[in-house]
Image (cartoon, rainbow, N blue to C red; front, side, top):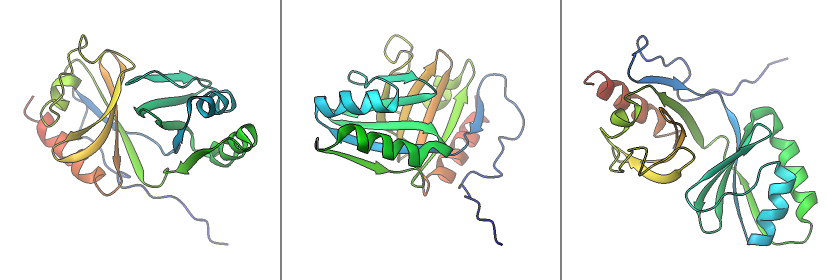
Length: 184
């Protein structure tokens, strides 16, 4: 019997040794969904998912699951990879006939983490946002660009960021960050 294994675009990539000011780490695959719906649908889906839907430009985490606000009625749901089918079924059962859209994007997106005291500076090598912690505090998230690549950016801690890119852009984003890090 042949065993199938999901291969990610950053598999095997390492950031040539640790960097005390800005570390790069490819994150393992996750269950990822785009959710769209009314406020009522979001409440029902949040209860089923196990995390509350956040206010604008924020992320909320609960029960090892995260929801990122990406637009007025658009959210990115993140959970452990092995929970994909369960999440779909639970949300469908919870919402019943309430209109909503839940689209699996686990195979489309690849994520990495940037951490360290110069993580924001590294991101600013290609991201136009003000990433000072007063302008972009912990739990803030948004869509933006990194060196022409569209990304989702979420500040997970004072010195750590989650970056999600479409898998076709992931190697480019990774190599851009490795090169920019060499100039810190």
